Image (cartoon, rainbow, N blue to C red; front, side, top):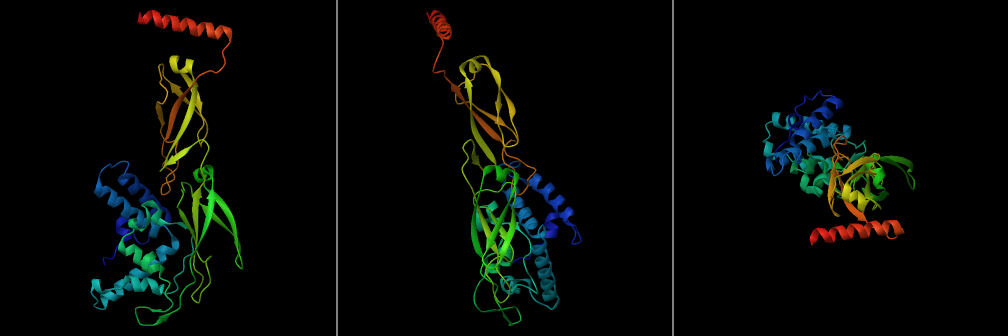
Length: 319
């Protein structure tokens, strides 16, 4: 298995600060984002690689574990070991020396539909083999290593507004007391938030608690990725003559210009008025507004007379 140099992938030094890493990630993510590179398989793979690198280097505990792995891997090479002979997965199962997860992070697999977004290298260290819960295993030197406690999952419902702005949840577990979790902006159904050390206890320390997010359905908006769709009702007169109508969005109301002759079912796109991107919260999807024409159910005598006059004019035009 190939060792991945995440520092090189993001183009930063090992001494880079969190701010440096975040800046480099955002620049590369914008450059290779699939929206800017449609049908470009190479850009898509690069985008996945960039996100994988940031998942590791952008998290304090993941970065520490990765750096420790790098030192072990290079020592192994200096001792004459062949790169293909290094057992990454067994190193991960041993947990490294004093390795513990400390941060709340978003599950990377949510970005690309489960584990398919991970490289084999990543899965060996942080997932797959890295999540092994066998009762008895050895590290690289044949020493028995005690297991961590079991990871557990906890389902959390949030509103679409909470997913848009980000939110907090205060939870409690028997014997663990209360704790607060931050749910990031752009979270969607299936997003997982890891709470380190909040799982079941074990000889090598507690496992992790994963909050599995479900965004409850909204009465006004439907979500597709980072885009939202909604309906807006307009009067017949506005559809015929055109007008400006108020459209509510999750970031405040905006004015939408309806051109003359608008037909029912026409859809308008409000760019940047959708959901924030989970990996890049400064990037937003769009809001798609579908027009529905509101036909009056009750008319005054004067209104009826005017509609009849319009109907007669239409008949004359067609004669």
